[in-house]
Length: 156
Image (cartoon, rainbow, N blue to C red):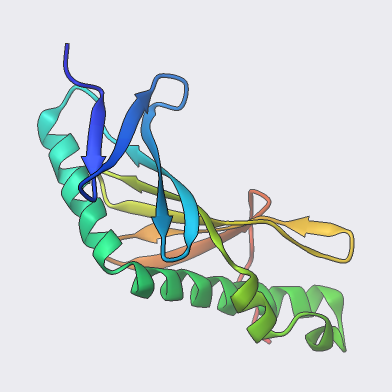
């Protein structure tokens, strides 16, 4: 039986979870603890090695990836929020406030190059939002979900 672990960043052990169908582990991402999910065939040594190397390359560029994820979330979410909330909503949620509120909570990477960042929840009034940015390593982020629902592109 193959080893059901991937070790990334020298000492972070990601163990395969039958329930989740992926390798899972915890590490410090900049100054935040994040839970990561690495998706590949647990019995394919080549896929595991490719995923390990890909994650480590992303980890070396984690500041850039974090900025890109936060900017994408702000650029997509804020016009939508302002269009729904109406005039004056810029005073409720500014770009700076949202940007600094977005703390990575989970990061997912799959062997086919799909990547997603899920941010810790935040609330506007009584409504909680849980934003997830998704895309590909080669093409960047291209979708945003709020509580599992795609946020439409809105011009503001």
